[in-house]
Structure formats: structure tokens, C-alpha cells
Image (cartoon, rainbow, N blue to C red; front, side):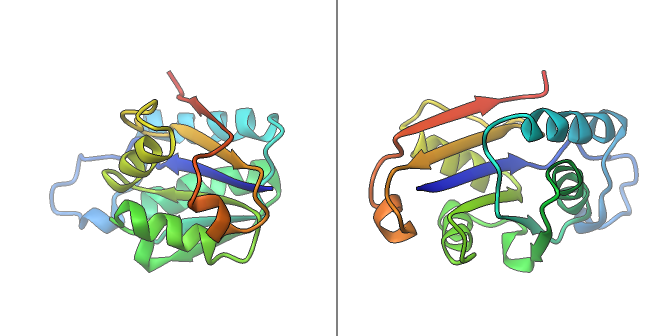
Length: 156
């Protein structure tokens, strides 16, 4: 069974206009939402084998919260920073695991979630979690089909 969890990074801090986008930290709300959503996720039936994260600070920090809550190692990938939907899905498929979490950015995450949910998820707000499950045993077969089911949760 192939399973995918998509997580948009938690709310970031826009207070320092001189700071490079890649280096923006989480703001106060994001710093609370990431561990809270991670604890909630850890109580679900979905357990990723690996967590893939964008190299951006806000994504790495969010992924670290999910890694700590689930006991799963985080792997950063530069290509996930600002990646389109196809790159995000390819990274998950190439991870070498049947259960993968991807922590990244919009608009790519929302586009992928919308596509996989057949329009049921129109937008991934910050720290939202969408999960998808296919009965297929490999990523090529799974991603050629609609998921058997999906879930969507937000911190609000």
C-alpha cells in the first residue's frame, strides 16, 4: 500500500524584509502550530517511513517537529524548495519507501493536493496536512490512479 502525507510548512515570519526568503523562520503562530499538528499527526494511523523536507528554514523546522513527534528521520532536499507538484510527487516516489511525508511550499503543495483529491482540497493553508492512500504496491502504479482515500486537516 502506497501512502503519501503532504504538509505545508507552518506560518513564517515576514518581520525582517532584509532576510532571504529561504532563511525565514517560523513566527509565533507557526512555532505553536507545527508541534501541535505534529502531535496530532503522531496519533493517527499514518506512520511515514521517511520525511522529506525542503531546505528552507521554515520547512525544516516544521519537518523537525513532525520527525520528533513520529520518531522518523528527516531528509532535506534542495529541489523541494518552491517545487511544482510534479517534482514533489517524483521526490516522494523516489524516496524508496511506501509511506512518505513531504514538507514543502505553495503553490506546488496545493496544486498536488488538489490534483490528488480531484479538487476536494483547493488550498493547503500553513501547517495543513493532507494524506493519500493507494492500494497499489508501487509508486508508478499508484500515481497512475486516483487514491483510494484521502484526508485533510488544518491547525485552525
